[in-house]
Image 1 (cartoon, rainbow, N blue to C red):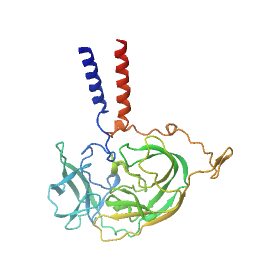
Image 2 (cartoon, rainbow, N blue to C red; image 1 turned 45 degrees about the vertical axis):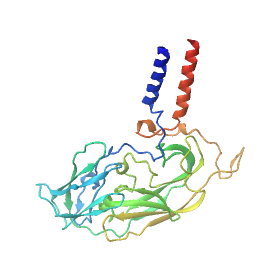
Image 3 (cartoon, rainbow, N blue to C red; image 1 turned 180 degrees about the horizontal axis):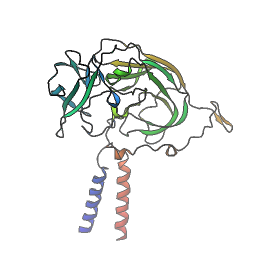
Image 4 (spheres, rainbow, N blue to C red; image 1 turned 180 degrees about the vertical axis):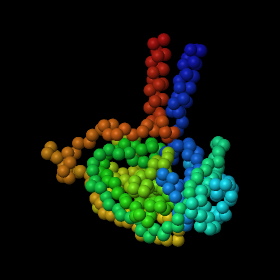
Length: 331
């Protein structure tokens, strides 16, 4: 009796250690709260901040908020710089200096996060003000790659990116020279056929127009510039199949925070297809109709190592219980 009690207790402890007894979350995959603390988007490689920057953005901790009472804008000698505080896009706050910054002067911006489950430390960033620059009037140019068939991760649920197979393409963006100095304070959205597709936080795109991973650490929404349709699904199934096969129009929109300007959006047309009629000699779209195992592609990061929820724990439970019963019969 004691042996059986120990066996079932050990199994229970093992399952709890695996997290298999916990119900899978229906929420989108994300790291624990405050895994990323308060951030201050600034120019790459220590570049100067235009003296007439409309506002300095303060990004809250992951899944939490900024303690606005701790916000400070200081000169290097500690002299406070007067500012007003405004709400920005994507749950941010915007520090708006009451007077233009002084070119050549060093500044420090700081704040603390409000985290429900842990203490936080003051976060800060330093920068140097540069000369005033004309505010941008254009975003730049937009093109699109030729679509290709392959495996790719689909985001949007608790699986942190499940590998699927389909047709996909990537938007190619080149920011205008006048936009580059203000990129850290621009947030982005992509629409397809007038409907929202994805978004990016402030400084979501670099000065070369590429994705900036530092702007969305441990966040698993759709990639801003990646467009796809799922043709063949794998387990776990995707939260959606993406775009329908056919012709579409993608539109890139950028918003410079707290600037009273409208930057004209950029649009480009593209087409995605799924092969439907495949014979021995190939498919109607020129493909072979052969779907390769997605494991042959670049491996997808294991969700269990990213603080993400896992499904399928029930199968683990059944397997372990069956093993215990077999062990008891052999006793």
